[in-house]
Image (cartoon, rainbow, N blue to C red; front, side, top):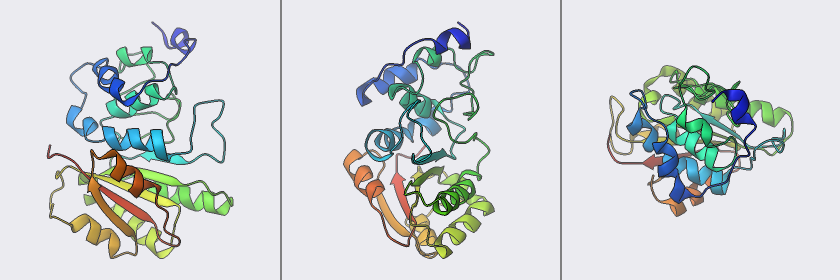
Length: 235
C-alpha cells in the first residue's frame, strides 16, 4: 500500500482503550518500546484534554504547539495522532517501511500534526523556547508544550533553555518531563529543584494518573513557565 493510496482513506477517531491495539500494529526491532510506552498517558491527556489543536483543515496559526523532543520512541505519538484523526490508522502497520511517512523518528514534512522533526535529543526544549517567543511576538494566546525525557536533560542545551525561559518569564511555555529514572545522575526531586531554581512553577505527578496530569498541564502561571514532572515506572 503506497502513501498516496493511504492518504485517500478517511481517518477514524478512537478512544484511550484502543491505543494498545493501535500500538500493536507497529512491529519491528527498532520500536524503542519502553521509551514510547512511558509517554503514552501524557500524550493522550495532552491531545484529549489539554491542547487546542485539531487535524487539517482546522490547523490554524492560533493552534497550540506541541513539540515532542523525546522523538526516538514515537510509537505512542503515532498511535495518539491516529486515534485523534490526524492520519489513517492504516499507516501504522506499514511504519518504517521505505514508502511510509512514519519513520523511526517523526518527520514534520511527512506526518500530519507533527510540529518538529525530532529524535536527536536535547533540541526540543530550546526549540520550544523559540516557538513560545515567536507566538508571544505575534500576540497570540497559543501555548507551547514540550515533552522531554529525563535523560536528555543531561544535554547542556537544555539547561540554557531552562534558564532563558525563566528569565524571560515565558508563562505560555509548559514542559513535561517523563521521568522514568533513566538519567545519569537521577535523584528524587532533582528535576523539580533544577527548574524551580530558574523561576519555573513545578509540579510532580504520577505519569499514569490522567486527572493529575490534566490538572497540572491545564494550569497557567502568569509570568512563570510551567514544568510537570510525570513520574513513570523505571525502564
